[in-house]
Amino acid sequence: MALSTPGSGTSVAVESRTLAGVDAVPAPGPPAAELAAPARGSSSLGRDAWRRLRRNRLAMAGGIVIALLCVVAVFADLLAPLPYTKTDFGRLNELPSRDFPLGTDALGRDLLSRMIYGARVSMLVGLGAQLIVVAIGVPIGALSGYLGGRVDVLLTRFIDVMYAFPRLLFVILVMSMLGAGLVNIFIAIGLTGWVGIARQTRAQVLTLKGTEFVDAARALGGGSARILTRHVLPNALTPIVVAVSFGIPEAIFTEAALSFIGVGINPPTPSWGQMVGEGQQYIRSYWHLCVFPSIAIAVTMLAFTFFGDGVRDALDPKLK
Amino acid sequence: MFHYAISRLLWLVPTLLAMALVTFLVMHATPGSPLDPVAEGANPLSPETQKNLAEHYGLDRPLWQQFAIFVGNAVQGDFGHSYVYKTRTVREIILETFPVSLLLGSMALAIAVVGGLTLGILAALYQNRGWDYLSVSLATVGVAVPNFVLAVFLIILFSFVVPLFPTGGWDSPRTWVLPTLTLAMAPMGIIARFTRASMLEVIRADYTLTARAKGLGEGPVVFKHALRNALIPVVTLLGPMFAAVGTGSFFVESIFRVPGMGQFFVLSMTGRDYPMIMAVVLTYGVFLAVMNLVVDLTYGALDPRIRY
Image 1 (tube, rainbow over the protein chains, first blue to last red):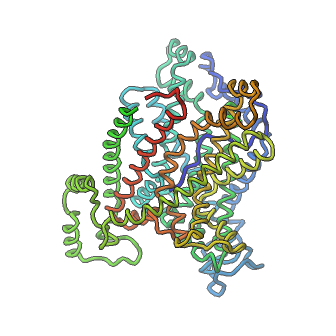
Image 2 (tube, each protein chain N blue to C red):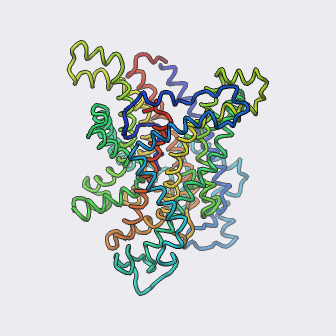
Image 3 (cartoon, helix red, strand yellow):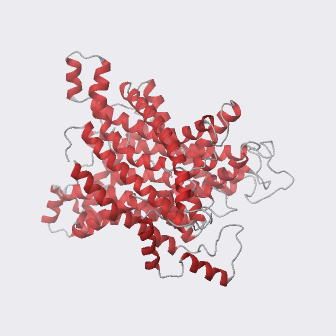
């Protein structure tokens, strides 16, 4: 079972000005902002955070790696020297050479091309699964926190039970229910991953519910739906953004783990996790089969983690 | 405190029942059955055979009856025969493999605690200096890089480049080193990050200042005043962590060929070995709940302000 990336903890402190960001703690939007766009109150927070993020060198390095990976994922068709299914049975398990920069696999397929297409799978899973997680987790958490009462008790109990399950086993259960495939990975991660974000959102909404600007909005005649979407949620965005930035590498990890086991991506679509899983059996004779995809996974995970740490520190300097 | 412990133990019963029920339902909702395995190389069975087998294992009864029978037997410690290893009971398999995983997990957790605390304390004491960067980078690698990837790197480094340890097996202490290290990295990273964060907080607290002001040396200040308070949030982590690490990791065990329980978290699922699935989920659940209880009771010892 995997230990999940924790949402808290600390990161490399590149700048140590602890006082600098106190003013950027999410300022309660003034009730007069009714007419303005809801994002307005947070735009200065956004600008401050961006300034802090830019100064964090590790986070920026992570961001650049992520941007490069996105480019590779989008333009995989142009970048890959060969199609990922092209086999060459005369040249099996070859070590890196001029023809095949990273060597070939057991079916004589170009490892570099397969890794380039593998980036596409990883990026899609990271973003796609998080979309589902947010779409399920945020509304449930917000409603449960805002409505309270029996709904809330039921949800917290449910969350407790979900937390008691070994997460990976549960994802595997769902995957075998749905069958292998990219979209099913989105669904499986979404169905098991929303719990954490729902819990975060609920906690935020509970705190914000008691603030004066919510009272003020209600006194001005705002309905529950309006207060929740216009006043409470925009102010609860910070921890949600942080949770998402840690959720992306977790989703990428889960896909790699599932494909390693063999219940993730359907072959012949290449996935880094699947390449490591198949390659590690022949590690003694053909080290290149698992080492290159391993490096790719490690670099991707580190880039997202450094970037996530940076985003958290930039958005919430108190946590530092 | 006694009452508290008892009521927590009693709460374990409904929690485990809920876990068993959810697992049972999801497991049966999954297409494919033990009689018609989707696994590679499995032979399709004739309908008559399937019917006989279903009768033999009680799979032809209504679901609620199957669940009731399961719970009745499980309470007496009988989880039935494995569908995959037909001659062996699930109990035998668990009793044989669980200790292996527990040993591996305990060693890994011990390394993680010692290493994580050391890294975290060093990082907090030398904030924004060399030690801090080194330990935070190491912690981030441990947290971020999946253990099957770490395993690949460790095998390449310590079995091929510098041939110190074998690539797998579980027959001598020398074979224990690499799987233990691989398994220890993630918890170590998490512990280091938490220790650093809470040490940084505690080290700026007034009582640390007081301790310094009255002339205490750096040693007593760090270990007697700061660390003791900084440990409380770290201890919280250890419960779920030990449950996850102590029940075995599929990846570490399959890569290093360790005969532990971790492999069944995946193999029981892909093989539709119903009794085995229930057994591993519940073992994990009991372990997790007991560990959380131990952690909560430890609080009282660490922090006299906490009362039950």
